[in-house]
Length: 457
Ligand code: NAP
Image (cartoon, rainbow, N blue to C red; front, side, top):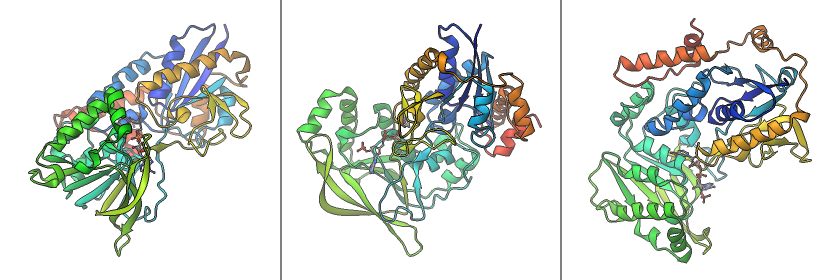
């Protein structure tokens, strides 16, 4: 029987779902799958993107773990595509590759002063609070007032993880250094800026409601933002989620804390709508001092137009949560504008000619861009996998498709890769660290320690 030897690059939900779907699919050939991951631990954004106080979403890890533990996928962790293993290597040893490398960089915001000290991308902060091994371990939380640009769920995660009292995170798997830093935070006010109105937010209701439930944090909304035109009224009336979120925000308008009058909490979360960032002002040391924004108004069709009125809010830190962006992969076509592998339903295309590139596939955020919840990744993977199955005639013909070739190649290159058994060791180690503090898990952060524990060294 023909055999498909498949490499998948990226062991986040996109890569693991693709492997699972292919292994369960109706097909006329055998399959063997090697899953490559640049980090020593699998699960991608579920481990390093979902906030620690969202255990329900982190619970997706259980389903992903079941797929890996079935034993029909080989995991090669701590292996970087492009250096430790290249596209030419994959062509030599596999019939095809699916890239599931996601989107982990912050989109840029081209306004004067955005390069100020203490102006961050959301991904940097998220990576830090989730204990990503490749980011610095220290974070300065000495600002009393900070801004968060964006009205998506990442903006909510960032704002919540800035405003929440550290003690309320102790029950989670928050890394110890993060807990200590958050505990010393001097924050009192977090200002969230949306360039459109309350009826055009990209939040989801559960995540929005959660803000209002934070202990010792007052929600502050501004009446002027809620004068809805027909377009906004229509948006509220026609979409259940928008309607629910509108109700949540309307309930905050009735609180004493509205317009910051009479709230009793020690911290406040302000929602500013119709606010388009224009400039970051710096102090004499080059640090963020204020955000200047232009008041916008509805264009009558769900968009916003500038009014020319400028406003300014003093702050000492700024986080932009305006979307993630994919990274190019050496040798693989890349669409610089959208930060994705150019593709037709997951089949990679040449960037300029739009010609099909045999053997190369994409799934998840590197395929469709950084939108959608984790569940959407499944249908995405189904589409890609179906093409891979149908494309049997155009697969690569590898010179050496043996199982031993890859471990031998990595060993020859001195790559300290980690495997599934190693992940089990690391997982057990983190759970044991947590047990000693009556916590579910304490994440190990430094990469070399993760590798050492994984490899049992
Ligand atoms: P998003 O949902 O696309 O939100 C991006 C936000 O940034 C939008 O409000 C957008 O405004 C704004 N924005 C973009 N460019 C801007 C600019 N130049 N100036 C000002 N604002 C700008 O992206 P995300 O928050 O990164 O989330 C990515 C995906 O992950 C989403 O599907 C999200 O739901 C999901 N996610 C889910 C959870 C969860 O379930 N808890 C947590 C995190 C992420 P416009 O709408 O006006 O473009």
